Image 1 (cartoon, rainbow, N blue to C red):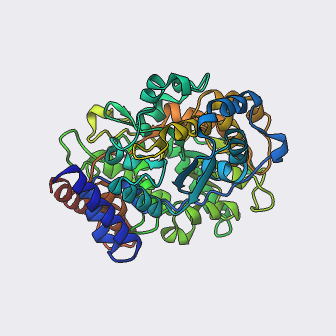
Image 2 (cartoon, rainbow, N blue to C red; image 1 turned 90 degrees about the horizontal axis):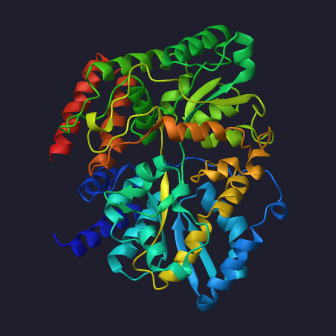
Image 3 (cartoon, one colour; image 1 turned 180 degrees about the vertical axis):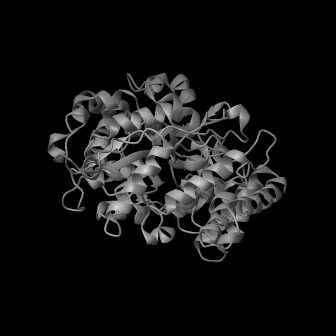
Length: 496
């Protein structure tokens, strides 16, 4: 099939699904064929924006704005458009920062904040039509392969447009693990790393102190602590919690952390499902035990329910998205402000498998990540103006402000973690940054990335979590029976 036909069909499939003309399962199967990954249905992760300072206290650098003003003179009056998911970077730029760029540049920036499947709808329609309605693309990591030739590689833009290059933009400052795990496809950069939700360990220090516990160093220690808390304090307080809703991508996210943490992998180098091997079954045995330390409603929760179980004082710990931590510290929104601590996830029980020992570029690691990139569209009518905005939006100075005003989200640039404005807010309060050293370590040392294959959308949003849900509902005789069923279904889908 010609590339243009593929793009048109991809756009039609996404549009039909968003408009309610196609079932979820049919959409996932079509998405698999068309090279769209796990993020096609969106995460739905609640990301409350918790500003820790007044906007007047945090302003863009005058030096940066002077560059914007000078380089933008030929583009005054230009309107740039971006469709994005609700993320801390997008919210901070849209609500508090773009006014500075617009004033300095003379441009207008229109940012549409939409559910992720609608962002994909806009993107695929724009690529297929080549109309250039959107100048910049927000790219979930799972879409990178399918759009890699429809965006500019930022390294090429820096080389080919030196007169538009921001001084000290420094692409080498982006954390290497994020470049490799999020922003690259084959030999191309599909934009630059923009957003990085990632699993870290988060626990109630007051309860751990009461029990005489420290942050768990091993997975088995994590289980033993969770069990002891549940035995001692249940049913008012449970030791652990999860995001284990049957058939939901969140359930697959939890599974990967335990699987990788026990030295397992989703695939072998010969493209066969390996979650039912010895390491995979050991992970299931562990997870089954840990599940019994969690609140009864956990099998009906995605990440939102998991986060609320901690925020409302029902659960004492979770290994989950670090973006919840600044929210937990908000005394106006939760019951646990000042009580939570962050730590690296417990270390794996067995040696992690290497990328060469897995399939489809899978990177085992207990810190499951779900990041995104920002790129300039090749269909843009004003690609140079869009490139100026993209550099500003992903620059060191702007990332510092995003991290502050966006609620302590994990920066994708290395230097931001050491900025005095970020370090100054390592204190209890809404939008805290006191967890960011852990986020940085996790990105460098513990980050896990799912495999990159066209069928992953169907597998991670349907095949795997549906069957895992059936296991926890008692519909299989054993974990081995469940995992063998997943293996059979997965291998059939992967083989076509």
